Image (tube, rainbow, N blue to C red; front, top):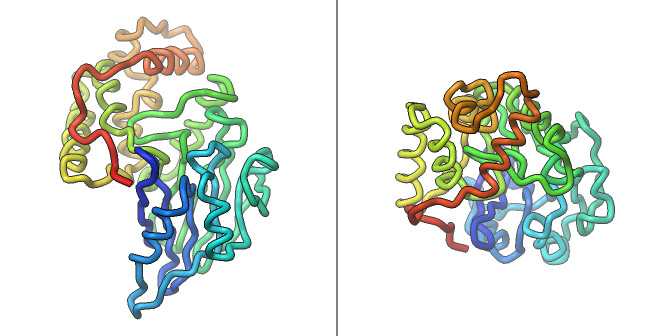
Length: 277
């Protein structure tokens, strides 16, 4: 399966999920219609055919993830728009109302909905599997490379549990998230674990990619377990940095990390702060 990141707005990603051996694709989280239509026009199959969009997958209802849905439905005649059942009435043109663990097929792929509330109550990830290939997951604004989303509608308990669900996927799973926040996320992580060598190398790679104007997605579950502070609550160095007591619950520990990230401000410009639209 081929996944094509599509930069939207100032730092969002939509994605084209192209079924191998076909000219069919799905669009994930179209923030706006124009960049997606341009990406579709640029992508051709091996025999030169244009892509046909069969469905739209939405990870949650925020406008910077669904703002282009109606334009694509109107322009391309898309008849299937997927989202979580709790987002009924909040995702434009939604036709499929998924439940946790529900699966459906697209070409030769199986797509499973994973309810991951916290950022919003209807947030859902899409886990995509194709035969023996490593799975991929679209996490929206719940899990970022090196970080996680803010809590708008849920609770720390919800968000921590949701991150653990994603972290339990096979370590080879490739992660496609909703924003290009990686450099800033790694800067914050480095204030909590300055001796984490995996994190240092990940920061270097991210900086190199951004200087070349490349996206930092995808990441992997394995890399996140080694570098993402929201998945590293067992780190003694991180706990010391935030004065976390070992007797606190994981959700309480998570809440302290999230509160620290909420007020964190990078002290110097990032190498490439925006992905051009």
